[in-house]
Length: 157
Image (tube, rainbow, N blue to C red; front, side):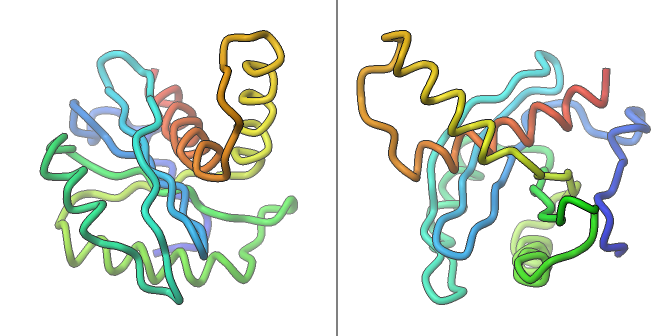
């Protein structure tokens, strides 16, 4: 599979309709969101820990059992120039394990600036009073996963 994000969302007839999961892979935490191809929106769900390269698979197992997604959109980490970076290799390993474990289609989506956008969005919500609790790293990770998924869903329309 190429190192560049797969742009299969450009060919909507090949993409199953239904619930998709968005995943923001990280070396310590992995943000998970869910979204709908019908609505084109996504919402943050949960964070799974990634301890020394061993994700807490039971967390993702439970999300998949609960939501029965038709596929996964995996945030693909690239440099500003669009090249692979160190974390891309770990993300590729996670992708391979997901493919074997779940047998769901997995689409790659460029994740550049998703965590920065998530942090800014949460800060604005807090400043406006729409969000009262402090922002945790987990909040950023799950919102970044939702933003990655929404970008992918938007390419379908």
